[in-house]
Image (cartoon, rainbow, N blue to C red; front, side, top):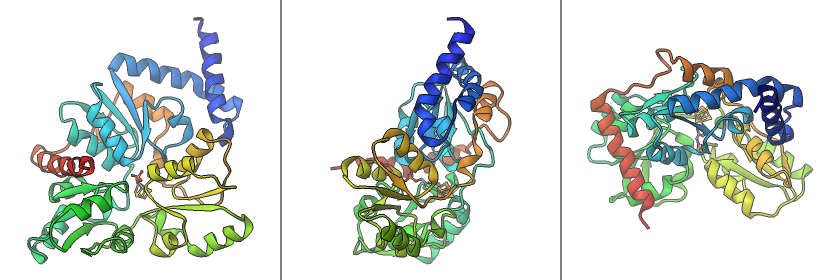
Length: 334
Ligand code: 13P
Ligand code: SF4
């Protein structure tokens, strides 16, 4: 196909997907050469792009081979045959992909894409906690560094945290590092959870007052909040869970409108995938998630730089892999 025609087709494909989230024809024409170049590089390098639902829609609906929550993406990383994984997300997610795929090249387009939860606790902190509470199992949220995972008995994600916590024998365990997720979980389990003081800078700022205000303006609205939100917010919500759970809830529920209390990328994803439903109000941007861009994805595929190539010390990797495999084992058990 002649180049001009291929570019026109690509711009039209992008615009059809992105029009509901504010991307105009001009924008789609400008990014079309880039998305085609990325597709070509993916073939040349035998690469896949895994994208978290919080990524910008121009990434999600142009070059991503798989879109999902932390759990789905870790499974996709485990299953892929590609030699190169470009992780359009944050560092702990790319590290998880590397832990599961030591022989593959895992690339993070924006090297500074961190996470306030992952930054909240170190391996040394976990070793100190284990000394303070000897014999207590350690469950760490997947939003942690490889070093923290390596010190844990199991990882968990927002989609399986309760199942993982409940699966451990004994009536007390350490759950880290998200204090709000721990408080939300504590209301659902009889086990005593020993927590840590980490928070997500996006979810800690939502407030129940705003939910009340929106409920008054939009009769019948269903409010969905992420389990990283403070209990005052989750108590004011109709559904509490991870990003994939929120998508399922919206798909299965009839309501005049939905308010998606999490990072804005998820509501954008729903607006694209469910144009027949109405989404209102409150969301917030994660500065880390939004660091990745299409030009960075092109560059990292073509010529990855130090910092964009994920490396994990082999001793740490082996221990962290055990904690991730434990999570898969418990999650898959009936
Ligand atoms: P999910 O696993 O629910 O997608 O959450 C990831 C995350 O970073 C939430 O802030
Ligand atoms: Fe981390 Fe919060 Fe950003 Fe998720 S939204 S990556 S938990 S800072």
